[in-house]
Length: 492
Ligand code: NAP
Ligand code: MG
Image 1 (cartoon, rainbow, N blue to C red):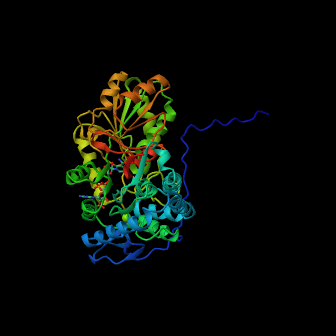
Image 2: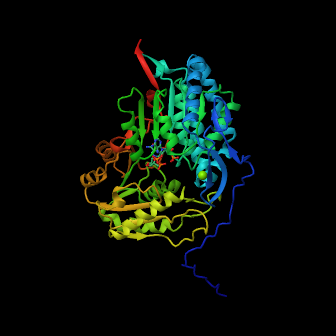
Image 3: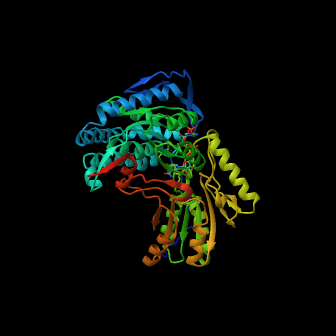
């Protein structure tokens, strides 16, 4: 008897994913939110409110108060009083306990924060849950540790807090940008007036109530929601000692010119157009994962996104083929689905901006590839996209798209890679993939970027400083360096 041998099929396997939707019943949302000033939620003197929507459904989640100048003034006064009477004189060890308690509560309520972050901003729940919120808790834990050790952080000087910090943050990492700013400011003994982005104000308000529950004294942290006008009122308020801004280069430049001639301290964390360089000797499969993470993490709404891919010419075609196959496996859609890799674009305005730049790429002659995926009927979504045949002069190679769009260029020699990588007004981050250690060190030295990742990408750690140069801004957040912008000192 002869056994029949069945030939294995060569057809590609089609995997289907059953929906695995994160429940939202953990949230206890209000219909309307006031401003968080002096330890309580208050109605805005402006009497004005705006909706915060869920970008995946376009439905309004809640109405949020829009702080006018009088509201910002009340928040700054509360912060000033809290600094003079309570937080400034408090021993570092006591401040540390407060920050540590907030960190513990962020951990405990991590799921709630992650769900709200996803609902309000559109990022995939698996990123909010596994990346954003753990890093947020990590930042508060890390800076709690420094609060009573400032003399050791900077030996030989006697560090002192500055007073009231006015902080303005963007919508791409609402909680993480809050943590990068609030945790070091509080550890260094400052009080805070924070302006979250118009499209993502809700987690900052939840954090304010968590801080109150944690026993943070009134006035130490104030949250004034609103749009650009509210931000402008915060940075230009005359009783603010320190301005920390994360956002676009255009607004950063405006703020810098407004503050010129004042004695306010300023840090600017602005845009980027990072080069991600792949050498022929790179571990290609790992590099593919790095590139995917580099540009499609958080829909590409990442200041340090690896948005300009430079591939060595002799592996270019093979690498692009692999990349296209990998692109086709990304799941785009409902951010609350735990399988989703690419969620919703944060706002209609951002979607319009992405569309406009992608159209310019096509009309300037670059070649576009998008996988064959179906986008939801409602909400703001954009297919993961890559462009080949990109020239350095194309807008998609020069301008920050801030979306899931990768521009691919090639190079022949390491020197050419460096020339092309540095051919940008930005200088926030860069990546390099090669198996040669000496080349990693040489590239890191040559590339004009605040952060250079080697054989990995988008790795963040509270102990590691982050920031740019050139038009990506100045000042560092994270690490011991992140305390410096919140301190003044006299020689001891
Ligand atoms: P944006 O328009 O500059 O807004 C950033 C924040 O500033 C928002 O809260 C905004 O209010 C507020 N704002 C707007 N006009 C203002 C003004 N005249 N004065 C004071 N505040 C004002 O930036 P975005 O488009 O929201 O954010 C994306 C940008 O942030 C990208 O360029 C990205 O690269 C950058 N980013 C940089 C880093 C970094 O660490 N370097 C990190 C994340 C993001 P609204 O609520 O009205 O927007
Ligand atoms: Mg929203």
